[in-house]
Amino acid sequence: FGSGGLAPEDWIVALSPDEPDVQIDLSLSYKRLSKGNIIMGRKLQGKTMPKRQATRRALRAREPKLVENVKKAFFIKGPKSSQLVNTALKDMYMMKKPDAVMLNKKNKCRPFEDHTSLEFLSNQMDASLFTYGSISKKKGHALTLGRMFNHQLLDMIEVSVNVDDEFKSISDFSGERKKSVKYGSKPMFLFQGDHFDLSEDYKLLKSLILDYFRGDVVEKINLASLDRVIVCTATQDRVYFRHYAVQLRKSGTKIPNVALDEIGPRMNWEVRRMKSASEDVKKQAMKKPRKHKPGSKKNLKKDVLGSMGQLHMKGEDTSKMALRKFKALKRKKPSATDGAGEGEEGSKRQR
Image (cartoon, rainbow, N blue to C red):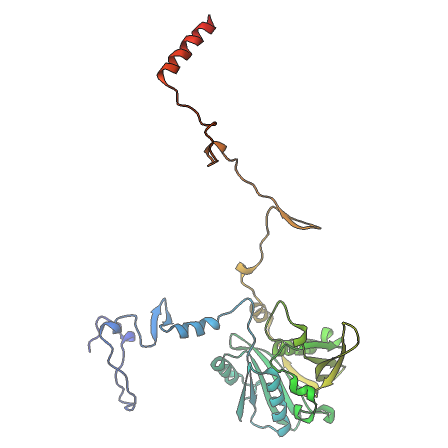
């Protein structure tokens, strides 16, 4: 069919000799193939806007927000892995569920050398967190925890897992309390040690752990739903990662006795290497929209009783207000005789 006044870059190719198996539906009318219309959507100011509402909602959900949703994570294996690394990845995946994706196949990617494949997977699955498991002769069993911003690598840290040979998975712990723990619930966090405030490596590790398991941002929470706690203890060269179930026992008073039962995984981490974000990228990632910043409120004061305000109103004209009318208050219309009589009386008074 003819171009119809379209530019060469807007032409639609119906059949390609290089790909004869490709079939294109040509049942569209010529008017629908006018300039600016394409099969997947409509061009508006250089952008392709999808026609389907479901696609628009999906794109709107990916837009940046002031209060973020729960971050999705994907777990990936390196070219070389071990049973211990696979078990550690599976345990982290169970703790992160349901906002997690587990990739079972091995991938030829090394985050600290080339992270383009991780950025591609992050864009495909709309995930901003990743965990990479691998094994090597020098570093042993290792996990790499990373974070994305706008589907570009922001920061990451690599830790050894089986330090001191104390690794235990969730399946190694038995108990009735473990069955009642909901792994999709919000956990409590306890970070012990001054290194989480002094060391840059430990600060990054703490921030990543909070991003992984913090859950939804809520204003109120039921205390009965706080059924687990993540405890991280930092020493000079170790980070002890523990996961406990909270058990409330009777005490004879309103305040119950709290007991902790370890449910796994139990891991001793040793920080190997890290890659932090630059100051410009970090500033851009933490930037908030200006319109959401709280502005100053005028004529508002706060005291012991609360906040009090002043209202400035214009003076009201009571003569125009719709009040209740009484017969005794009605004004009589002046007649001609009344006016003449009033004139004579006025002249006599002047005399």
